[in-house]
Length: 87
Image (cartoon, rainbow, N blue to C red; front, side):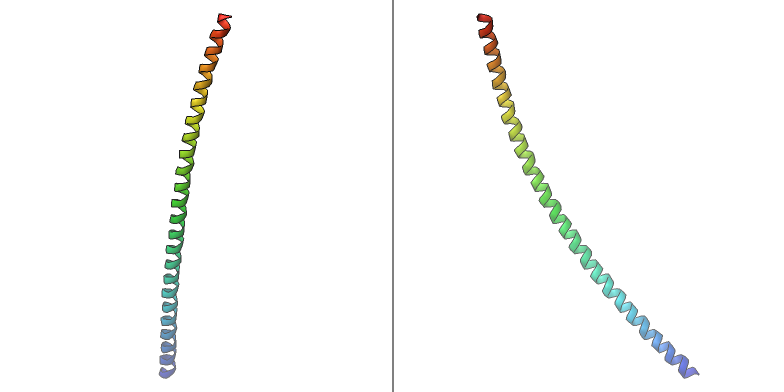
């Protein structure tokens, strides 16, 4: 009976070792996957940030161009109003 209990204990010890090994492997895989996802998301965030900066610069340039056109049109309007008053 002691031999049977000892055999069972050895079997369970081996099973615990296998389970610990599997747990360590899974933790390692999960850690690598987490790092990969973090790296991917960081790269995506940097790409989006650069794209946003590019769009903001383009929008600033477009706003400046439109502001110049508005200023020119106001000047033309003023000149036309003065000509109209002169007539």
